[in-house]
Length: 317
Image (cartoon, rainbow, N blue to C red; front, side, top):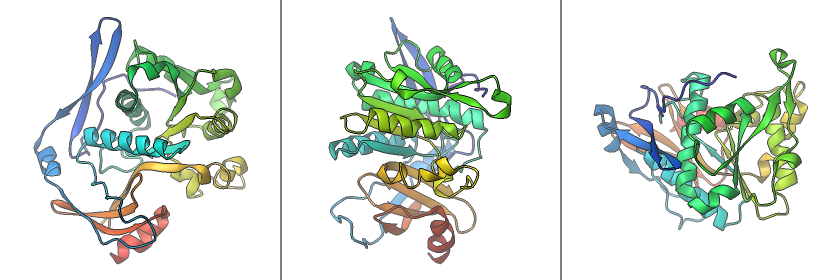
């Protein structure tokens, strides 16, 4: 896998606004900061209003709906708060999923390597906001491959105390799609308290290793595991045929039911487009953007399928 050079651009021009990251050196420590750039589209986005739909269903009506983020700075803050609340509720396996090519983008809008590079920037910013400095040494961040660890160490994570690791390493048959799985029991250390796995979707083996990590290092412990932009909807929707990928398909019955999706954004384009949005502990909301506001047209306690949102909820709203 080839990663783009670290331009630290967080979103492309398809976004209503964009962020850039700058490396700031402070003696031995290097930190990545996100700078918001205002433009006309940004000002329009910041004026967006959010209208909450009436509550229906069996969930806790005392939970206030979180508004759709106006920019990536607000998004990271919302995701951080969602994870903190989920941890207080003793959630061990969590998912964060959102587009990195713009808040209104969909998978495929950005070039794959660019989206992965942007995810690295977002992971660093998220970790800096979630964790105090003393927690960095007990946090292990997994990237899909060893070369991405080297890339992260030289750029965004240079000079930090976070432990960077990898899920797979290339084999002699890499050109044919074969990778060597890394045994998680050999990677995890006793002092590790939090695992964060970044975008484990490039190779089908990566999520199988994540399941191994969860079973061997999280279950029956106080540790937490966060999957960051893993594009798990591919597995949920049956994108990988069960006949060819039985182990991957089995995750819908083994791993995914144990997972709490604490922060989620999925956009639907077209005339009847909209957004599926969730910020823990709130409900799942289907939003539609109308001029200068987001309107919630539907909400429920459990996650609806993308097919249900696209074909039923948005078309009838």
